[in-house]
Amino acid sequence: MAKSQETWNKKEKEKIRQKKKEEKDKRKEERKANGGTASFDDMIAYVDENGNLSSTPPDPLKKRKIVAADIEIGVPTRAAEEEVDPNRFGTVTFFDTSKGYGFIKDRDSQDSIFSHINGHLEQIQEGDKVTFRTEKGMKGLNAVDVKIAKKEVVAPAPAPETPEAPAETAE
Image (cartoon, rainbow, N blue to C red; front, side, top):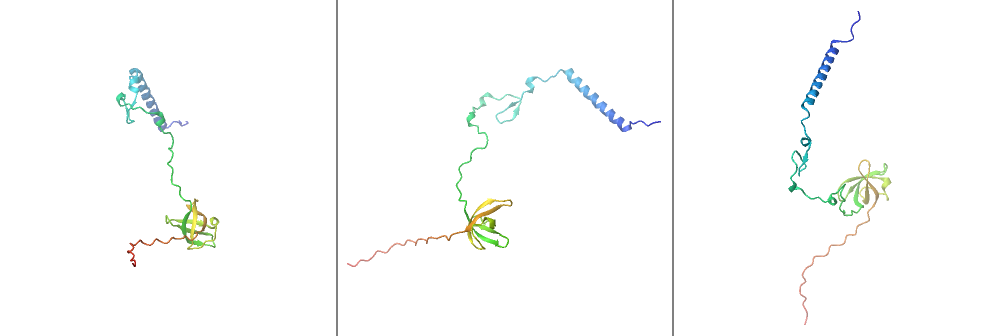
């Protein structure tokens, strides 16, 4: 005699499925019998002055007038920034001529900035004072348009003013 393809576990699962279906049908019938007690007014939600949902309508005395032209859509325009001189000053802290790269220490921020020989306008070596611009590279800032800085002429400090002694005159 051939064995049935239906196992005990399959029978149990089918019983559970049938039970769930009967419970669902029972709930459906109860909802139909109650006749839908929810009215349209019960379904409406209001937004109060703080943006929270509530079941009561907002107070008309707290209503504010909003001018549509005052509403900014998108990103506001940025204020004009100071124009920063793109040329920076620094000192060559390391440069390997055989490999063609090195690092420049920025005078203002003290950052170490990578420099490749392809971005040089003049031949440089360690210890040189240089001017350069920076560009965003794959691994950070890169120095480009590197050239040796011209010697800065420092004006001598003015001599401190001393009160002059009255000159004696020969009469």
